[in-house]
Image 1 (cartoon, rainbow, N blue to C red):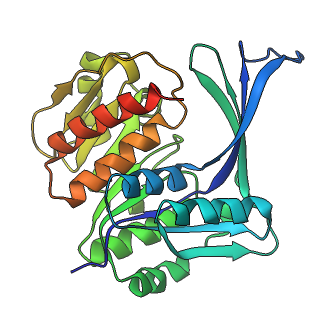
Image 2: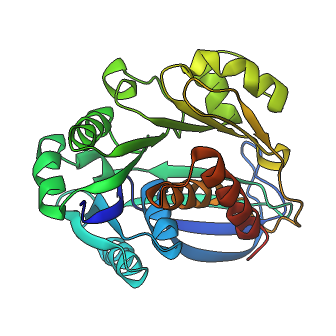
Amino acid sequence: MPAFDVIVCGSLHLDIVVKASALPRLDETAVGTSWAQMCGGKGGNQAVQAARHGAKTAMIGRIGDDAFGQTLHRNLQSAKVDTLGVTTDSVNGSGMSVAILQDNGEYGAVIVSGSNMTINPTSLSSTLSALGGTKIMVLQNEVPNAVNVAAAKTAKQNGAMVVLNAAPARNLSEALIANVDVLVVNRVEAEAISGLLVTDRTSAIVALNSLGSSQRSVVITLGGNGLVVCPKESNAVEIEARAVKVTSTHGAGDCFVGVLAAELAKKATLVEACQIANERAAIFVSRI
């Protein structure tokens, strides 16, 4: 029996979130109304959300030997995420981002990857062995492709299900995608990978073939338009968005993926897991 329900291998960023009425235009200095410091990175966010949803969760990542890194480490531990696989880079600073949150809840962000880019792919096999294995391995695209490939291959060899949240969008190597069981993308990522315009659930269904839904399960999230779920070699299922007043969409996708992984570890079907993750993400975006 694997020691963990979910292991997330990926990014850890400290986010500086600034609230403003709108994103600044080129050469404009916009006036903000408030700012906050938040622990993030897609990997860190997903691990915390999986743990909060009841999954025994571990994180594999890398932080800098700095105050940001200490904060990120404490945040994982406070959420009861195992940090044995989180190592420290004494040369490169911790990953960070600056996000501007608009009054309508939408946001734009810039990330600096820092120590996230120095995770050693050759150490992942021994790290996973030391952790004791997992039911679900979760990956994203904020670390080098070689790290994702090594983590996916090792996890698959040890019987885990591999979930890839292909965000931000980039070319997916065959070595990686061949080891992915569930591909999760939003509209923008689906367009970038498939080459097809994705605007709603109908066009998302059209894009499924180009995303390899005959070889792996595919989930396309569409924000306020809901999502489309296509279990491997099955018909697509459309799920409606829950109507809520949006406070902020920042981190909503990570909430969805974390809860999805936790539910899959409980042996929920993909459609069942997506329905629950959709509900949790709706609650997430409606809170401050």
